[in-house]
Image (cartoon, rainbow, N blue to C red):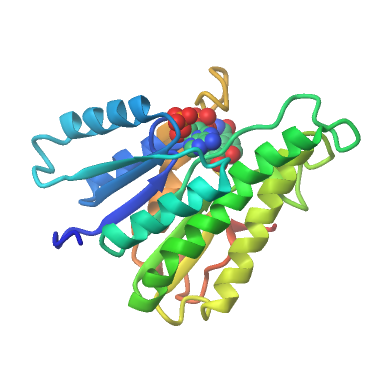
Length: 251
Ligand SMILES: NC(=O)c1ccc[n+]([C@@H]2O[C@H](COP(=O)([O-])OP(=O)(O)OC[C@H]3O[C@@H](n4cnc5c(N)ncnc54)[C@H](OP(=O)(O)O)[C@@H]3O)[C@@H](O)[C@H]2O)c1
């Protein structure tokens, strides 16, 4: 067990993009980090970059890395169980990994392989990580689960007119998981919060170089959900919803 008194944040997708930007924000806020991603070298580079950046301001910062292919359900379950059994109970579980589906992945044209790849990474691994790691957080009555969803997974609002079926449906599934889990755990009444966030179109490997938002801007609401006093939400029972720019938006 990690005996440090510093809070721990477990961050999937922490090697780059929005997950890395979120890791920076949480490190600045005094969290120790456990970073999960697929590529071990990128994880180590992220770890070194964070340790260098915070060498002067967060001298006690510790970062562990956990390389696993989240497309593989057995490997994901094994890694999640290992993390739950060996690290301290996290205060924050931040799920910021994900893949986009292929451009032509309309429902009638998507292959089984593409469907399963995207659903496994974007939805099934979210279930496994939450199912393995969050019970101790709920038990501790002190935990926040924040999951990067996407506006493309909404059932309302602009931009949900079809296409990218595996991606959109995986994110709609993430939204449903968040709402369901929040209700199962008392909507914040027991000190456990679970929320989805839409970062908006952000300059990352997924979002591309022409996206309007920086990674820091895209990560801002997720960091706020993980760290801000719960009363800043307006009410302690506001959880199990979809957030964009610190505001609740319809699913
Ligand atoms: N960027 C946007 O405009 C945008 C908009 C809406 C929602 N989102 C959501 O925000 C989240 C982060 O997106 P991003 O733009 O930061 O993406 P990104 O830059 O492409 O980074 C993806 C992250 O997910 C990890 N990952 C991907 N496949 C994996 C696998 N099979 N096993 C383990 N880790 C895997 C990557 O790890 P490796 O480095 O090891 O590959 C990387 O850390 C995603 O859920 C995405 O759907 C993004």
